[in-house]
Image (cartoon, rainbow, N blue to C red):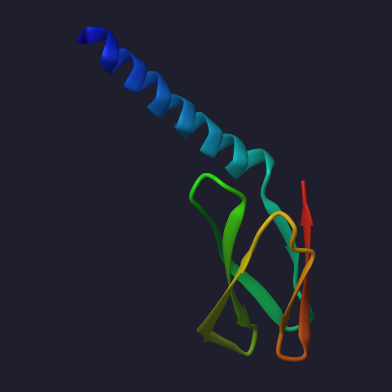
Length: 87
C-alpha cells in the first residue's frame, strides 16, 4: 500500500516537472502589431496550448484573447496580424 503512494507521488512530480519545462523552455514568442500590448500568456494543460490576452494601447481597459498551439505561426485579429514564434 505504501508503494502505491510512492508511484502516485512520482507521477505527480513528473507532471509538475513537465509543466515547468514547458513554461520555461517551450513558450511562444508573440510579436504584436503596432498599437497592441500583451497582457498575459497562460499555458492550458500539459500540452502546448497557450491563451494570449492582449489590449490596444489606446484602450487598455478592454482585453481580448486568442489561443495558440505548437503549429500556430500567426493569428489575425480583425485587420491586424500577430506573429508567433516558438523556442
